Figure 1: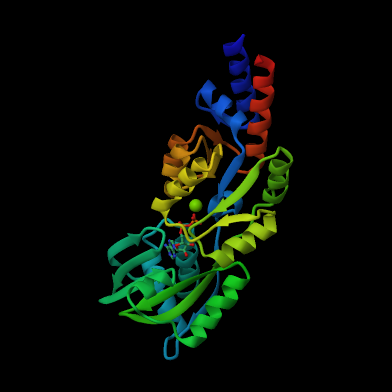
Figure 2: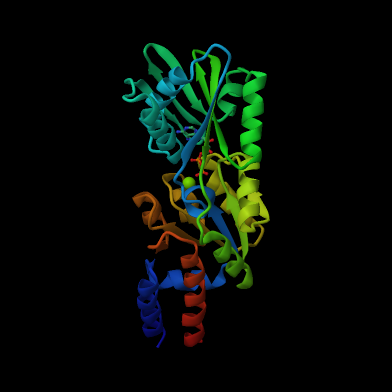
Length: 293
Ligand code: ADP
Ligand code: MG
């Protein structure tokens, strides 16, 4: 009877938009007590918009948008898409970039018109012992206090601008997280984004535990640490960044709206790309396995 019940469960999952890789994934689902949720693209829509451009003294807004847009145009990151699209909308065609580099979890770099351009987290400047002028620092702090992401733009070693982008929480996230709690699960928000943004999103959706400013390569360590504390961990993610963590988790759940790499790494794929499918998957596995017992 066991294989039959699992097959029925797997079929029922497909109807709910939960693609289950193998019958053992249903068994892993039942044991889960902690659900780690990637922020961008998982709890939030991941569709960001460029909202504000703050420039340093003597820097033209159009010039800042031109170089930032050019470098970000070479990246697939949701933040990069927002900046490139916002820049293009305002100034038209973007210049070419050479020597583009993706600085994983930090930002991007490239050369535009012979100038060295960096865009990303303030840590990029700190690493190079560059400061942020007071006005830009204030704009960044104000944006982050509102739960927005501030991208610092530096050109030839000088801070040029702070570009503010924002993402929106998915309409379904708060309810799904409340339901996870009702099922006795502890949600944890995991992100490379800064603590202020992470806390603001967490508060909006009702998550108490936040692990922020985690580099992509370190996301897997957060899972391992929780497992070391005796937790049975599910990880929900969408990105290339999340693949190792999805594979390490006791149960990896990939958003169907995310990257192929994430889907390959996960045990379950959530076709609808919303967190209610996590709740459905857990309920389904409990029901299916209860039938077997
Ligand atoms: P998350 O964990 O939320 O999916 P990432 O690990 O992809 O986020 O990125 C972490 C942080 O690095 C972002 O919040 C942003 O501040 C910065 N960052 C990453 N890529 C870019 C980019 N292309 N342009 C600007 N900033 C970036
Ligand atoms: Mg992500």
